[in-house]
Amino acid sequence: MFIHASAVQWLLLTASAGLFCETMALTVGSPVQIAWVTRDLDVTETALTSLLGVKKWIRMADVHFAPDTCSYLGRPADFVASISLSYLGDMQLELIEPVRGPNIYSDFLRDCGPGLHHICVEAETTERFAAMLTEATQHGAGVVQQGVMPGGMRFAYVSDPQAGVPFVEIAHISPEIRQFFDYIKQEQR
Image 1 (cartoon, one colour):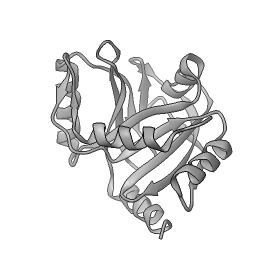
Image 2 (tube, helix red, strand yellow):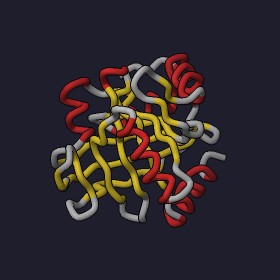
Image 3 (cartoon, one colour):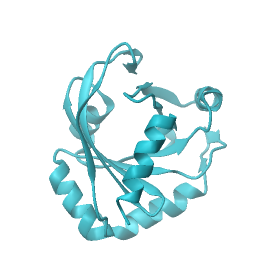
Image 4 (cartoon, helix red, strand yellow):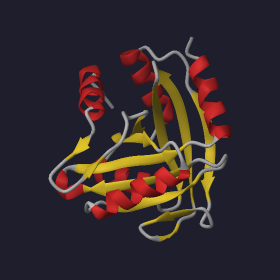
């Protein structure tokens, strides 16, 4: 897997301008995360460390997304993924390696191979999270996968592929997860 640093810079610049296309116009803040899906966390960590100068990755192996807290394509989802996180300045970098069970990440690998998967925007409150999902669907986007991670972080992936928007993650970050993210950011210094 080869990722051009200029491609990441382009993504950051265009994404920070907001998400605007013919069929979807959401009012959101700047992206807080760029995420890749990979078949091998080691390989992708090594590549991004070399290309971007990332100092340390924090791994969460075999995170279980249970059917009582997660759905995929409108049905209860039961899957496992390993996740690696780091920061480049204030931008979180997320690597996702699907382990088992049907999910958005496994389907992406099957259909597209490893690579850039989504950007994430943050909803400051649970009410804003719900409102952002409603706005997205009212503007033609579909909710592909959503749920609550262990630790209480709410997430949803919206997509409008006809408008060139494969996946945007909307997340409400719980205080517990915020503390964990702050720890990861501190590890970069």
